[in-house]
Amino acid sequence: MAQRKLTAAFVIAFFQLTAQAQDDAARRLPYEPLPAGRTEVRYSLSRNEQSRDESGVKVRFEFTYSTLGLAHGITDRLEIGASLPYFHSSKRDVEPLPGLTLSDNRHGQGDPSVYAAYSLFKEADGSAGTTVGVIYKPNTGGGGNSFSGEADVTTPYIAVGKSLTPTLSGYLRYGYTHVGGSGGDSHRFTAGARQAVAPTSGIGGALSYGRFNGGGLGNDHFWAVNLWGYVWLNRQMALVPSVAETRYGDRRGITDSHVYEASLSLYYQF
Image (tube, rainbow, N blue to C red; front, side, top):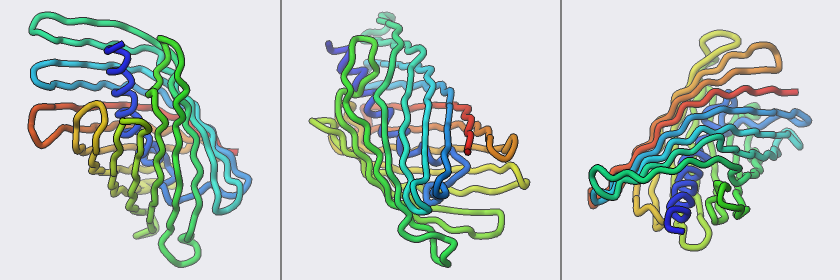
């Protein structure tokens, strides 16, 4: 039971640190909605490594997972979507004492998430693009192989962005994540940019700072950096590789945690 609670805590932290960054890795920036009637399908394959050292107890997670996502433009301002992760493998090592390591391996379905985003102001209207949205991850529970956070997670956010030059766009984003029960909450501030290097390709990046309040991991802040690129294979399909690193801990200095992730995503629009 204790190991399952630890897994749930890490899954919640995983969602807090990645759900708000999902739109950072796409060619579309957070303030750019899908056109009305447009549908986007995304498949991602990711490798995620997490480690934590608190008062001499070391815990390490290694996830390999895929995500299937779907988004649709209801109107030129309203977009809805959903995603479902599946963890192909998970290795967990716990070292309670030097030289003693406890390990297990699991696989299974994670909690789905749904979202809605509404464009308050569009850049085409002459102002900075401004979008508000909410991401919701329900607690689906599940059996022993389920990678459930065992809590409802809600993330409202706002993003503001603008084209700075014909090839360079930048944005600012604030997101608040609330975890049901005693899971705590977090605030995340992100600044990002995208630079086109050719008509069909470009690069981008984002830097985030966040604060945790409460929760099962005892951390109170984190820094995250995300670098990505994109290339359109044709008019409908884009390939998006990305790498990210997140470091989080507390002011007491007794925890040292970090997350590394590499992903390869395929986007198809029709």
